[in-house]
Image 1 (tube, rainbow, N blue to C red):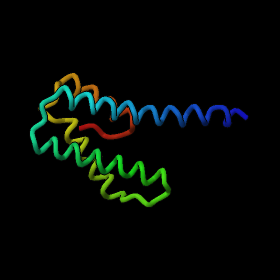
Image 2 (image 1 turned 180 degrees about the vertical axis):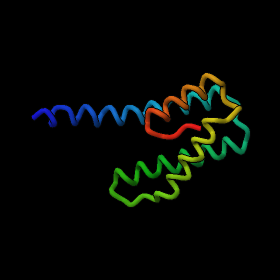
Image 3 (image 1 turned 30 degrees about the vertical axis):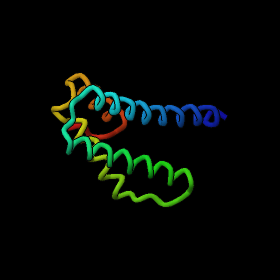
Length: 103
């Protein structure tokens, strides 16, 4: 009985973490001054992840290799010197909370 009560709350908390990390990254990119290459990489990575989310919801298969590369690209951008230092710190903490290794 207890598991039934806690499971939905836990699942909701996981989704909130992803949304918060996405929101933090979007905010950092808006506040920063990414160069053209970084901006193109950011836009492409977001497109891959958004497409994968849509495919997953509709039951289609997802290209995990492309998703991993997109996450690596976003992690690299999150460490960019073109972002404000406070945004980089916030992103590093956010990625550590998600279980990702922040370098």
